[in-house]
Length: 255
Image (cartoon, helix red, strand yellow):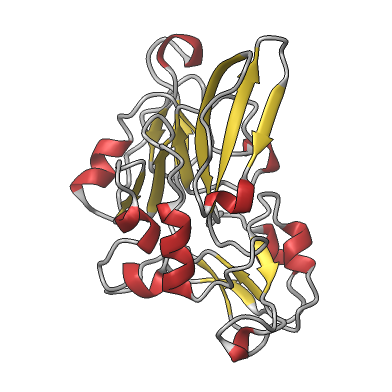
């Protein structure tokens, strides 16, 4: 698959504004606007779409990711994981993620729970990635098509990128891992770059039984349709990282 130049994309609100109509995704250059914009849409970027209204917390995505990418099976190492958010009648919000959701969740509620849902998380492949900016040796870099990767040959395990990531999406590969060349280096979700560059879906997307995860290839019909979906959010937009993972169905408390 031919490498593409990085393109910028934004979220734009059209119609009656956020309260009445929610967010509509526009893939184009420019800044996020709540007043709408008539700029030309661009469809040639990778997008990851997560619909939490479909996620059942089964953990198959986490299992598939670990198998596909040789992620250590210990509970603290994940390229992708699932969190459960629960709102209680007394106003308390509880967030848990037992073993990253690898084994699923034992129950979906509890006494006094008003609502709950599952939120899959992964690397946001930021357009302005702070992890790239802080790497002292250039081991963390962005490809021409906008995916952030780690070159294990250059990584010195300084952990600067781990501290810089606002989404907690990185870890240091341990001695217990199967890939010896990765030991002591930073590891993270790559959206299964080895697969998507061959036109295949990421392993977590392929494993999802409900279609909660969707990977959008450039210049596809899905890329043109997704910007019409209402109610999309990104995580921590105030950080200015311009994430490329878009969520449907989450509340502002999801960070």
